[in-house]
Image 1 (cartoon, helix red, strand yellow):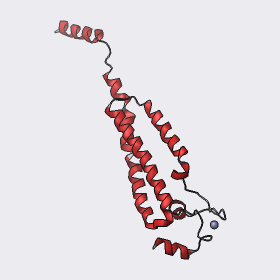
Image 2 (cartoon, helix red, strand yellow):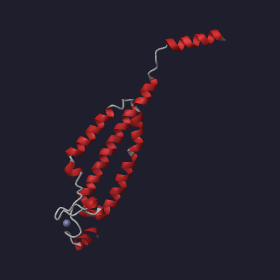
Image 3 (cartoon, helix red, strand yellow):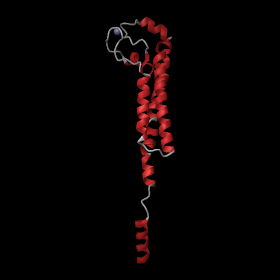
Image 4 (cartoon, rainbow, N blue to C red):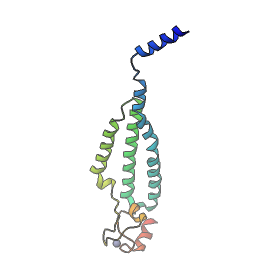
Length: 151
Ligand SMILES: [Zn+2]
């Protein structure tokens, strides 16, 4: 009995350290990111459905929401590919850099949201900020126009 245990000890000591656990751990963030990114994906899609209520009045902002959704989906696909093919999590930094670069490059398309009125500078309501292309407050844009465009 004692001899067998001794042999087993020697065997484990001699065998080179297994790299398998390290490979599994290297894609932990990728796997986690796949789950985390589902939340903004669903949220942006629900937000897009909400924006559809405003039709022509908010076309640009709806396109912005959709293009931001594309970026999130792109990041999700990258995370999926990374965990599928065991690409190390460090490469996620490159994906993040590309995602941020795309948003900055296409900021006119993807980020048309303004916190203040384009005419008077007063803070905009959240509904106006996220759903109205004109970026003007209720005082600057008459309510009558609102009624016509939402119909
Ligand atoms: Zn205003």
